[in-house]
Length: 163
Image (cartoon, rainbow, N blue to C red; front, side, top):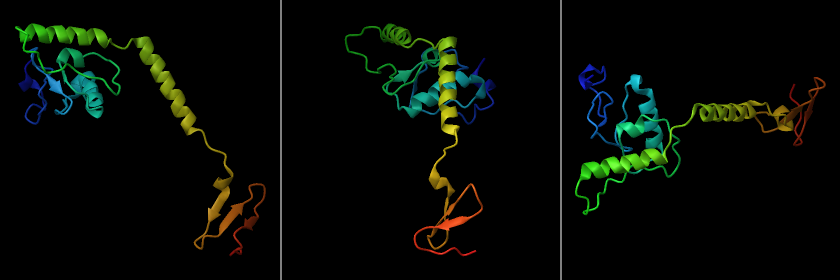
């Protein structure tokens, strides 16, 4: 495939295109994100890295894997030492090291993470039983406490009931 076959090609400003077979493409977290929905995994990785402002550059191979992005996640350092004779082999060596240090998330781990997320969401959605929920301030700041066991109102703050 070529980039021209992408429906978003004319509007795209992402320097790394998944449709290009060139392995020398790199992406920095300050760069634009691929907007093609066909490449959801790559786009998701880009968004996470951009949110964390991850330093260094990332290759297509790095972005194609599903890994955990945390504060402190870094790409490959773009500085090559002057002693490096072959920058291409140095790039491949660094990419290989990065890939070993950032393994893909297993299906079991993804499922556990999803379950933990659902449990935390469920705990947030539980209704609170708090006495202040039944207190209603009126326009003059007088707090009327509704008694749930009867239809009577009691007034606090020295005000009177205006029924």
